[in-house]
Every structure is written in C-alpha cells, then in structure tokens.
Image (cartoon, rainbow, N blue to C red; front, top):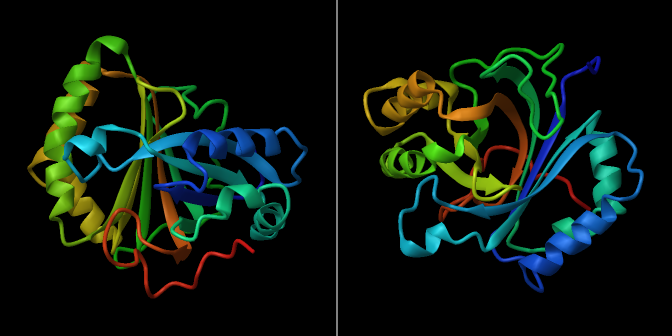
Length: 245
C-alpha cells in the first residue's frame, strides 16, 4: 500500500485528434515506457450516457486516460514527456485531484490491478466540490438491467442543480462501466445519490441483486480543472487550470 493518497489525473477527449483508434494506439505505446511516479493507469473508451440519452450517446467515440501518481510533479513531468500525445486535444477535459475515500464492493476488489489509496487524506467537507468515480464490472446476465436502470439515473443527473459534468468510460467493453461525475458540492452529490429517484433505485438494485463482480468507489477532491465534461460550461471555473504542458 502506498504511503500517501493517490494523486489522480483524468483526461477526456470526446473527439481525439486524428481519431480515437490512433489516439489509443499512441498512448498505449507511450505507456510501455518506464514512467516515474506512475502507480496505475487505464486507457478507455468514453461516452456521455451518464447524463445524455440520445442515440449517439450509446457509441463510444471518445477516449479517456485515468492515471494515479505518487505526486503532481510526476504527473506533470509525464505529460510534458512521454504522455504528451494523450493531452494534445484543445477540447480536452482535464482534472487533477486527490483520492480522499476508497470503498470496494467485495473484499479484494480492484480496478484492473490498481488498489487506490486514500492514506493521509482529509475528508471532503459538505460545501467542497467533489468528483465521484465508480468502477464496476458487471456479471454478464445483468447487462440489460443495468442499462435500463442507467437511463433513469442519467435523466436525473442531467437536471440536477449540482451536476457539473460526467462521463462513462470503459477499457473492457461491454461489461465494464466506470462513471466519472463532477459535483458542485459534496452535499449536492449526496442528494443525487441517495434521494428517492433513479440513482438511488439503481444503487439499491445493484447491491440487492449483486449485479457486479467487481466494484470500486472513489471520492476525489478536485484540485485543478480545465474545460467542460459534456456540458456547455466549465466544470469548476473557480479552480486553477490542470497543468499539462
């Protein structure tokens, strides 16, 4: 277990330059190098089914890089060096944050070998902004039910006053579904998660029926943010920009 909380970076490109296939190939090639300070990383497909329900939302045209680091300095050095190819899109959304809470659905659950660390971090206060990441791998027989429940949860997120953007990512289609959602405050995030409605019903169903074979839940303190995540306005305009170059 690392001796400090993970420093997390999230970079989402809805339309990667030169296309999503080439972006993924170049980033995976870069990750074959020894990158100092990199604790874990996933290269993902992405879409906005977390809050948009149009037909195009079911396609994964975007790409996303999620990485855990030992420090902000290690992350910046990598983005200025071998991972520069991942962050060249001018319409990219980028987030820097600190993992402040980790919960797993079953003992031993992990995110493709990554066991996130919140060691030494301070809990999020009710009025602080919050990023929530829920990584899950479905049992195949529950895929259609999950999609149905997700429709109701997404419709509620789209109109929730605390929602500042979200994205659905997956490095292993079709059974992995990992959501990254951004919230104006932790208090408003809890209202979306637990008040009666689509998400609360979906969460209760998933736990009662045990729909996932893997589940990892993260709370992340946003430290820097650049751009928007599926919305028309910047996600966290009061935060400094995420450094990538």
